[in-house]
Amino acid sequence: MKQHKSLQVLGIESSCDETAIALVANGLEIRANVIASQAELHARYGGVIPEVAARRHIELLSPLLAEAMAQSKAAWCDLGAVAVTRGPGLAGALLVGLMAAKGIAWSLGLPLIGVNHLAAHIWANRMHEADLPLPFQCLLVSGGHTALVLVKGPTSMVTLGHTRDDAVGEAYDKVARLLDLGYPGGPAIDRLAQTGDPQAFALPRAWLEGTWDFSLSGLKAAVRRLVERHRLAGIPLAVADLAAAFQQAVIDVLVNKTINAALAHGVTTIAIAGGVAANSTLRATLGAACAQRGWKFSAPPLALCTDNAAMIAGLGYECLLAGRQDSLTVGVLPRWPL
Ligand code: KG4
Ligand code: ZN
Image: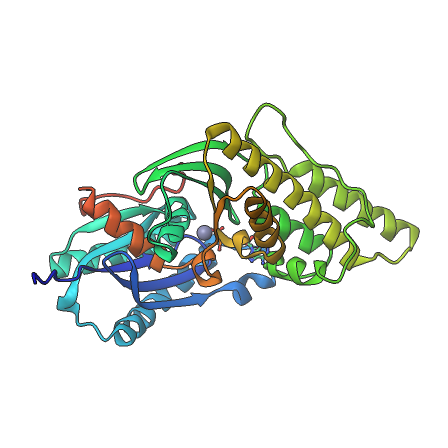
């Protein structure tokens, strides 16, 4: 039998506050996936400070690279390509990863592939489940982006709608700050909401009928008004109830619009991607809505939902197969739509 040599791709991710390196064989087999979160460093500011993030990426990249290579037991000469997040993200942070990737690609004579971070989040679904049928519709919910995307292939994704203001993760983080729950706020609200009553507060939902777009600023403002009113009146706030009501308002709209968009486009496979895809109630609610219709639902494991470099290497491999490769002179793309 003919033996196919595996193609190992080194992935580098540094678009925000996570420095991550991975080694993935044939786009699917994760041989190493290491990540260093800077969340603690930024927690005191309640959000990511771009210059601080970029400087920390510089400090973390080399030791993480050594760790990933050791974990994978691969030698440098085993690498077949270098994939790196080119955007969207923080310019300074992206630059650190791209420069490292260029240095490695140049010194080893390997192809360099600049990867779209959002497309990689989405493609994590196919890395998790290699036979997930195409096309599928993906709800992309991260700290910086919220979109409904029709996925025809690794290099063919169509945005059906997106947020007109805050991203879902951003709304979680801002509401968490209002409720003094710290940063990042998503996991804290997720945990607290489990113990609250979602019916305790009536919060608005922006349906934006006739579009597949989203809007979260009205909901965020409603939470702020409630918090201020309670503070001014000296009434204790039922924080768990408010967290649950906020989460319910977000999920109602996300799930409803995802299902309706799929009906409109005749798609029966639904996927979820991005950091907020780690949310337990969102996964359960969307999963149940799909099951009710006999549709397929895919949700990557948590480690592939939040920022990681395995997804960068995985999509980088697909781009390489599709004949895409970048020159060593490419720059970062801080604003790079799908
Ligand atoms: O995709 P990601 O790791 O980074 C970006 O590319 O933005 O997403 C980070 C976002 C943060 O806003 C964080 O609060 C949110 O994902 N997040 C969650 C959960 N875990 C992370 N939001 C809701 N529930 C969670 N369990
Ligand atoms: Zn991300």
